[in-house]
Length: 243
Ligand SMILES: C[S@@+](CC[C@H](N)C(=O)[O-])C[C@H]1O[C@@H](n2cnc3c(N)ncnc32)[C@H](O)[C@@H]1O
Image 1 (cartoon, rainbow, N blue to C red):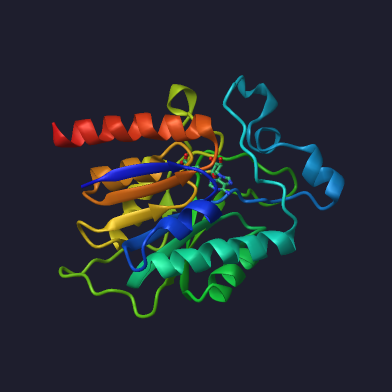
Image 2 (cartoon, rainbow, N blue to C red; image 1 turned 135 degrees about the vertical axis):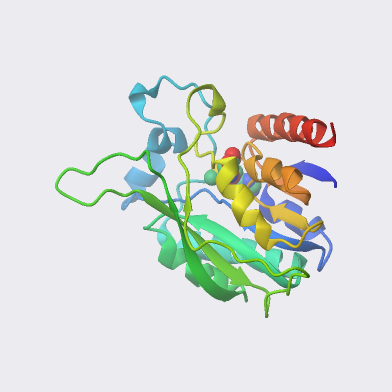
């Protein structure tokens, strides 16, 4: 199994990856969620949005999280079009989003030419209660495929819901980090020994899950700090897996 992290903008790096060379696209983009006015969007950073002020974290910020709805849909469809070119026929594409961005994300997937196949809620047992309203305890993973989904040599039956809280304390190394346990379940849709493409690698959580699950991994990350964090985590996972 191999792994690599490209440091750069996904729209610049994706065109360098050959046609039909990956078996799963797993994308966890900056959600660009909230911010109804230009002032709200420009005035707050990703850190302001995703890290509570009392959490005491000094985690690095990242750029690219203040698009409005229309530009988010357009930008994501450009990314997902390139991903479709890179995916083998039958490959799956999984894209994370929150409740606000689910419509924009499903539009972008379909504009890009993917066939939308379902939604897997990700339930986070540790989530903030909502006074006088419903707790927002789920994010969502939209599932699509490049044509008819590939048939696995040994049939697989995957869950329709995944559960797990975001890493906390010392285990939290990224402001919007996804739990490796969740990613491990999702990556099973990639045929054994296949390659996972992750255009927004962050701290490399999907790469850790891919390596542990015997898949190769190509990650792209724009923020230099997080690209380094991802390289460190992937090197460690590769060492532990081969030991
Ligand atoms: C939601 S986070 C991914 C978190 C990751 N799944 C993890 O568990 O650590 C999105 C990441 O995309 C990166 N990013 C934002 N815009 C980008 C772009 N245009 N190209 C590549 N990476 C980008 C950010 O720096 C951020 O680390």
